[in-house]
Amino acid sequence: MPLNSPWRADFPALAALEAEGQTYLDSAATSQKPRALLDALHGYYLGGTANVHRAQHLLGERVTRAFEASRTTAARWLNAESPGQIIFTRGCTEAINLLAYGLEAQFHAGEQLVVGAAEHHANLLPWQQLAQRRGLELVVLPLNADGEIDLTQAAQLIGPKCRLLAVGQLSNVLGRWQPLPELFALARASGALTVIDGAQAAVHQRPDIQALDCDFYACSAHKLYGPEGVGVLYGREDALQRLNHWQFGGEMVQVADYQHATFRPAPLGFEAGTPAIGAVIGLDASLDYLAGLDPRAVATHEAELHGLLLDGLRQRSGVRIVGAPQVALASFVVDGVHNADLAHLLGEQGIAVRAGHHCAMPLYKQLGLSGAVRVSLGLYNDASDLERFFAALDLSLELLQ
Ligand SMILES: *Cc1c(COP(=O)(O)O)cnc(C)c1O
Image (cartoon, rainbow, N blue to C red):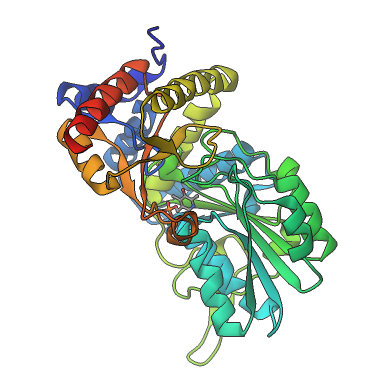
């Protein structure tokens, strides 16, 4: 079966990599970029750069307009109520750190922050460190055998002391959707704030913020066929007002003297310093590109490829898939083979996959694994990519087993 991606040609790097004999199966780490983004970046830098929100000259106004248009596009893409709810950060990691610092004053010793057991370090360590600073308890929700947060245990663990629940919608290791509506119902009953780490999820299912019904949502442009260096943080209006400012400097200030200052509200009050202007403008093009695709066609293509990936892995003896992935990726281990050795041999054959703990060390420790090899798919991958992967896997396993 050919199973070609109708979108592959939109990504010039895919042809370049193919010509080099490289097969890219690491889109969960970062995505390749569509021509629409490259054109937007080219256009911005060729047209003349300027800083945003401060210049009075024509170029400054033009660049500020393009920058703010990207905020409007991001708000529309997320189905947020208004562009003012979108804060541009340097990535999902920075967005969650912003929350951990910005919300710090909301919490008091003895209260609880709650996360899932499969969180990426980006949605674990900021809360862990906040808990240490404030004398809070960090509660970790256990997973069931499939890798979903166990709702029975969650109902026992999310109690009246819970002040915040932060969950990754889709684990970058397990590829499993978390039961957010049920979890958020528990959190709301405790009056807790809710945070979604959407870094892995957003590219596979367009987020609908109003349906997700969370207080905060964070994701990274570079995993959305967008540029590096930009994250998107959405906040519900009343939740944004509970944030304290965290990074201080230019553009976020209202009035300053030597001893005191007052600060702007969100979003600009949380965008201290010069932002990644070109990248924010590029994100607009990437989101436009994504919005122009037929979501059902993309989902069908990704599901068919994912099925091929899982079938192929299951057919090979000694290969064990970690958890029960539902979308776009599979982490696996091979009996008697170290994941780093396997990824190294695959790499030598031009297969780009990721080995190790995938920024989720506590999860791997709990699973009793030192790491795994992860294959992850983008909409530009073809069945031919998986054929090359499996041929390389078979050769590697012959050498290693
Ligand atoms: C990649 C990822 C992050 C961190 O995103 P950055 O772009 O590295 O800041 C957080 N959570 C999950 C689930 C991820 O996959």
